[in-house]
Length: 83
Image (cartoon, rainbow, N blue to C red; front, side, top):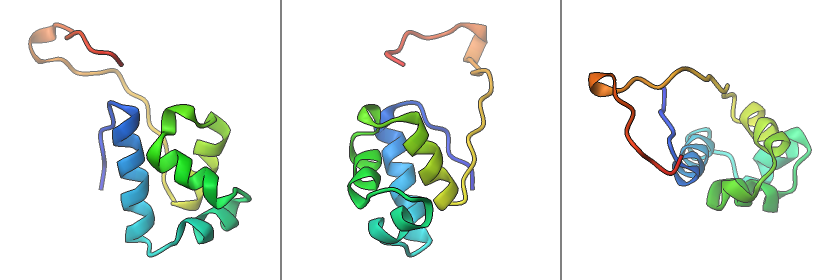
């Protein structure tokens, strides 16, 4: 399943959803990649305050990868957004 993430809040929800679908506690996910449970909690609740390194570690624990691609815009015009 692919998820399109446009805000930090959406990222946190996707991370939490994936962790729960794998039936992992925050502590179990953290332990597999050397993070603290509070770091996993932070990535799920306030990802904008977390480090990129921690994000990549959690992505690894959750068997996810980060893919960057150009945005596609309806009508070829970019809308204004915070992100």
